[in-house]
Image (cartoon, rainbow, N blue to C red; front, side, top):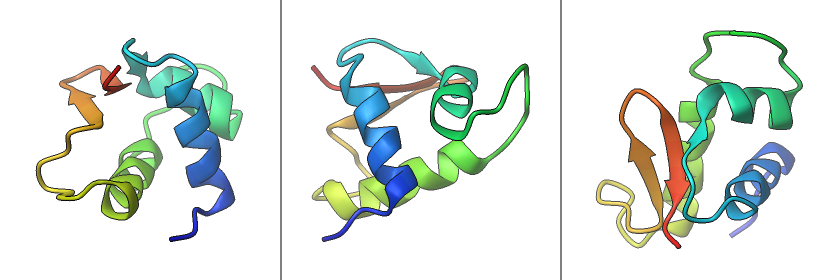
Amino acid sequence: MTLRPKEYDLLIALLQRRGQVVTRSELLEEVWGYAGEVYSRTVDTHVAELRRKLEENAADPQHILTVRKTGYRIQG
């Protein structure tokens, strides 16, 4: 399994805040360099790909969790 550069950056950003909720806006700014409130499905798409690569069952993730209407959290 190989991670693409943005997938790796996204994973690192989540791991650095293990157990904390990281908003989509924070991830867009940190990983992609977007400033302000940009609406994008980029984060969701990359998280789905990370889950496909890292989770045993991407449909029932145990590690990269969604926090509805907010963002994501790595299970700590």
